Length: 458
Image (tube, rainbow, N blue to C red):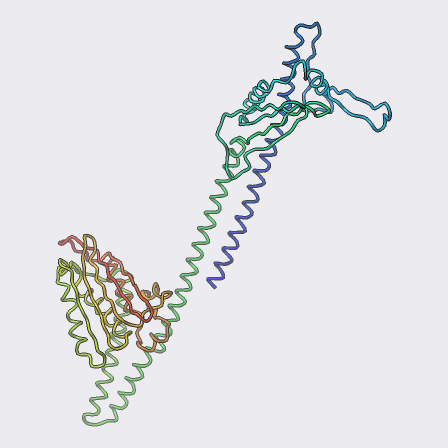
């Protein structure tokens, strides 16, 4: 279910990002189209201004004057046109020639176009329209090509087409041509577009955050479902066996006489003590999680937390067990809660023995630095699969591998307790394990200034 929810969420995010990308592309494309139209209009007006200036300068020595006053904004109604009609077939050979094209053709030799002047007019007009940008003008005739380059700002965005080209013929015969390569100004990609990008980014982040929170919630629900399943399994299988054994021993003890009755009563008592200890462990774990358990730090020799376990397991007749202890110089004394540290180390040793083959070899090493005291417990056991290593510290969790189920019938509380002990000492626990080669647990306990005791588990 969780994987399906993640898949649907990913598809939804990709779909949303795709829509936003198309939307932004349309906005950018519209901005560019508007600028292209505006720039082309400004260029035509600049060409007309340059032609007017040439005519004024050329005709100052003559008694006549030609002035162009029409605008290119509405060419069909305002522009003065000359109709050239083909005499052979007036119905088919009609060509509209603007007055500007006639004058460009007429004065192209006596007063040729000044490209620098045109570039100046074009640049000033762009600045007046608040569209100042870089451009390259190319003037082409039958016998010459001239180029004028204007730069007044840095290039725009790399990922967007930086420029566009437009070609304007100056004469009807198209032997005089102005080609302009105009770079998009930064203003085309700013303003409202930046606001839209920011809003789009905020919405995307919000959606991602919502999906992450939803995924975490689903993960917690799945984890809770697994915990409930484990508790149900625990109550129905693990508690039923000792209870049934106790009832059977009591029934047999009632019928037996002499020493036999005492034996069965003793067995029933052992099973009841086991159940009582199990219940106490569960209550302790609940106290740890609610932060009601107390710890009392004191300075003690770490050997006092290790040696009792070595002595206890050296007399185990069922397995060949070797426990080696190595302490780095200066690591003999630590400032911590002695009973809890002792129990945590003992829990790791018991797990190492339980989930190991013959012979069992366990190496315990202690070394301290400026910040932490590190206690390492390494075994040659069956190891823990990589995909389950992060889960073994959860309450009631047990490795699902069949070999683990066959070797031990734990309740999934031991490592949860060890994790709590480490956290109360403001430390951390880590695991390195490889299936078939063994595991190494490292308890890193944060060193405290002696004399300061933390009496509440945190």
